[in-house]
Image 1 (tube, helix red, strand yellow):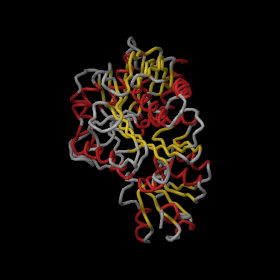
Image 2: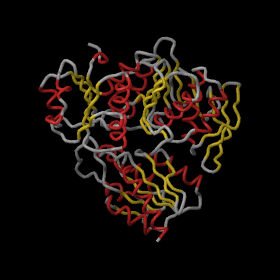
Image 3: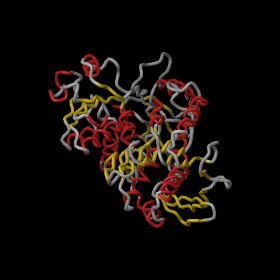
Image 4: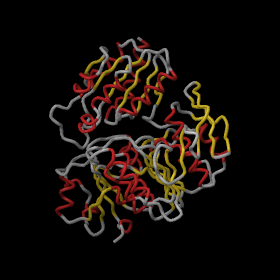
Length: 451
């Protein structure tokens, strides 16, 4: 039985960024949807506003009877859910068909023309930029996004079903299930060593992903990667290049050279070399989809940004920026952007490490990246799906940071810190629940200025 033939779908961990988009898509094709998540969030509130019943108690007794028919209900879960979850145990015991979200996603996107964005960093930004371009074109598409685009206020854009645009995630080897017509690999950096044994194992998996292209498909890849496809980057030997990159008032201005064609003064409403690269990838794919160049250029200029991706939350009384960065390379990208845009502002970074395994694997790299900021405050590690690892903590990072302006804080101490600190620029960073503190931090900064 196809995964798309069920009547009812029950999502365990429905508030996750990928799960919530999948749930909303299934609702859009007239399926009955319900789910569980232990925490209320932007995503769960959005789904509930669409009429989806979500429970917060890990108790099978609260599941609606309609979803307890094992022949009519497909159960979808995320790897972040513990095997001890009582709802998951209930469905297993009663012999329901249970699949990962990645299995359902693959069946959906592989059924039509598929565009897949891969890479260790930049997937969400690239997918978001391309989604905005396609929305402004006449193409009919649905995109699954790993973040919330400002203005759209959603992590899914439902605008037809001729094209599916999806992030091809290397975590849990999800991307190996996707069979795209167009694929991109933005970069490959060491990560997810709970899944991969080393960087070579990770690169081998990306190589496998390139073999998934449908007949006649095209791969766009960073010029530093040894793949058969259309290369992009800053290298003069690339098929497509970014040249003359400058930053003005938080915007990136650059030229795009594609073979012998040059598009001058491309404007992106985001700073940073990495974001210019993400825009280039989106540009190339849009051209391949026959979108008019002027539509692409206008869309890049009007791109509204993504929540938690170098999101400038406040400009006054202090600059406050929130970012999802959770890998040393991403932290360095944020730092470089800040120094470029605000070279004279004293900065404070509040960082929440994500995963014990990632902290252990990149301990020194985290310290070297974080110590560049003027002042560093570290929260406890956000464990997500993991159990603690002995000897691994935020203090492990702190001890390696060569900067005397460093401290460990709890979430409740954030507010006094930002209220009393003399820094002109404050950055909150991490992939855990630090994002839930953004509105409160903004309010404290505004109120402290009024008093």
